[in-house]
Image 1 (spheres, chains in turn orange, red):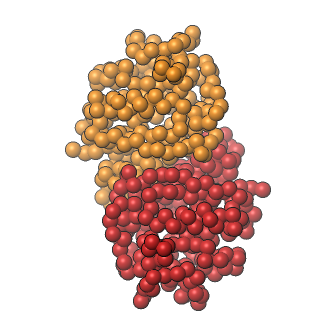
Image 2: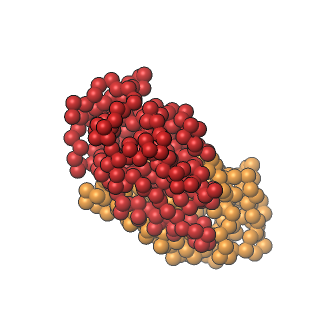
Length: 229
Length: 229
């Protein structure tokens, strides 16, 4: 069985990626990061639900992006509420985060003799992060094929799969539902309360709720407030 | 004063890079990694000598490559002795190591509003690592300019400086000496003994000793054995 490394945060998108990779016939190696994120409940969900999602091996790497700074997700800056989703890159952007995450995924892929990496980036309903765009993924793949012993010795070529890239949030939810995902097993909020309830007003909640509305479905997670948008 | 992030391990090459970046007028931000390497004395040297080398800020990030596995440098595999330096990629290769290191350098550069990264890779007297070649560095730079908010918002373009790329080890030692480096403040061995003395027989020691011989100089560090090569 071919192996795939799936960047798996425990959120809606990456959990859908796990289901897509399994449906494509891969044995899934789930990679999560503890990076000083405020929303560490996402990581607890990831750990708890990995076996139920059919993840063969789950690795959580500690990468302290807090020491690097520069983001509302890892530093002591307020997360914006009900921000209009526009073309501006928000302060929740973490410097070079997907570059760091994909670099680790590449390292693990090489060590496990896998040539397939899945990442749940999306260019439609997204927050404007530059490291979610197709041109970034393409450039990363080119670099990966020059960076590694496995590629240089011609055992294979890396593919970074981005199955969600051109899907709307509603399409992602429909796809995952068809593949049997229970979205109660996912968590997306950037600023949950102490009981882990989603805020309903951060970028991530706003996009998620909009997705469920457009999919004509009820989001099974609990919110403290729900955006009026 | 313009800032540069310098990947600084405490070894001969990266210490020379620090001196070159300073001579080019940069304020140097030294970035080291604790990655489960056997030769952690290199890191202790790095920490101890950073102020003497004029490093403005020194950041040591904990990145546990041991959890990823696949290398003699981080796993329980013997480091080869007196191996002929040929075209084969040795087992001291760490999967995607320079990709991970440069990804962090990029993250710190962006957070510090720097567009310059120095890395002491070398394509002449090297161990055959794919992630030390010019084509890898070029591909990384292209990716960096697509990955980051700073580059996308056109505040600048990243440059990954590789001043040692086409120098022999002897040329590196001459350059550093001219810039005032005391190479007693560096450490290169992959497998030092408990007192921190270099083994003299690993790839790194063999290349270093050859460099000093060719430079017509005496290596100031202490060795337990000296390669007969």
